[in-house]
Amino acid sequence: MPIKSYLVHPQEGKKMHLANVLSEIEQCEVLPAENKEVLILVTETYSKQEEEVLKEKLDSINEVKLMALVSGFDTPKK
Image (cartoon, rainbow, N blue to C red; front, side):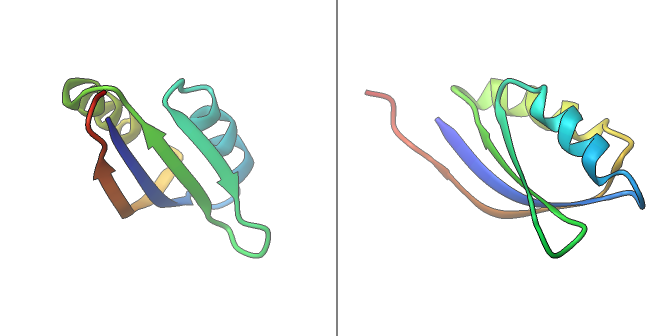
């Protein structure tokens, strides 16, 4: 299952709203940075197809100014 982490830079003044929007997505966990206007986003999906659907959903969020992939890996299914 693909697990990825991102640094997400929100549009100005939209950090908490964006955190709420991302938190509502089932495959996402959001951690706000305490000292910067940035969010840490961790995603976990069960297939490459689900990952593609999630990526399209994330790309369509207007409050995102920049999203940078920090790490990603795919764990084998057992």
